[in-house]
Image (cartoon, rainbow, N blue to C red; front, side):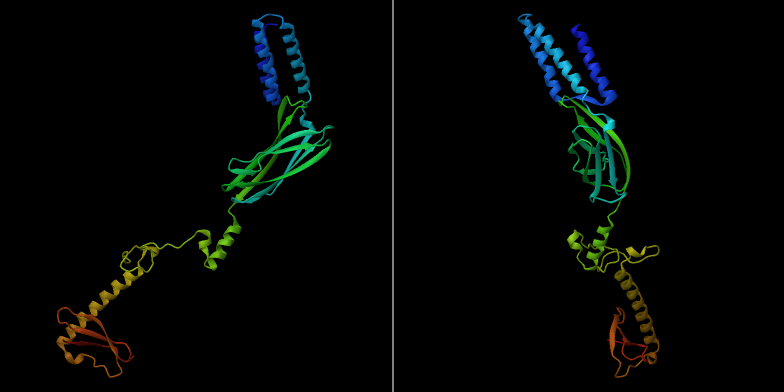
Length: 303
C-alpha cells in the first residue's frame, strides 16, 4: 500500500473514533507509533530492514486494535449523585457520588463531577479501582462564590484499556439543581457580636460621617426646608434657633425698658438669674428667672 494513503487513513480513523465514541490514544501508544518512523531512517543506508519494518508496523497495529476492543462500555457503569438542594454562600456543601461496576473484571476509573463555573470542588477528581460487580462511594465538598441557582447536569468518567494504550470518556446524566443563598449562620454570628460590642473581631469599625446627624460642632449645615433627616446637623439647627430667639427677646425687653421702666419684673431673693444675651447698643443684660416658677418676666439692667 502506498505510504501516503496510510498517512491519510490513520488520522481519519483516529478522528472518527474521537467523534463517535470519545476514544483517544494515550501517550504510550503515541510513543510506540514513533518507533517505526525512527526505524525508517535506516532505509537511507539500505533496504535490508524493510521486512522488519513492515512486520513491526503490522504487529503494532494488531496490538493496538486488540487493546481497543478491551475498552469498557457504557452499559458496564451506573452513576448516581446525592446532594442537598440549598447551600450557603462561600460555605462547603457536601456532595456524594456512587459508581457501580457491572462488568465481570476489575476496572480503573477516573471520576469527576460537573461542577458549575462559579463553584469550586474539593477535590476535583477521584481515581478508583472498582472490583467486579461492586459499588464505590466518594464524597467531596463544593463551595459557591456567588448567589443563584446552579445546575449540575452530568458526571464524567475516564476509562483506560487493559494495556493502557487507549482511553475513553463517558458522561452520565445526573441532573441536580443547587440554590445558593447568603449564609444565615454568619448573620447570626454578626448579630451576636453586635450585641456584645465585639464587631472588631470581624474587621468592622464605626466611622462617623460629617453632616449626617452626629454631634460634631461647627460642621455641616442646619436643617432647611426639604432636607432629609439623616443629613441634618442637629446642634447647628438648635444653635441657630436659640440665637435668633434670644436676639428677639433682648430687643423687645430693651425697648420696653426704655419706654416704661415700671413694667420690669423685680425678682425676689429666691429668684436666681443667669445672663442670656448682651445688647450691643445699650449694653443691657437680659436676665431670665430659672428657679421661681412664678417668675416669668425678664430683667434689664443698664451698665
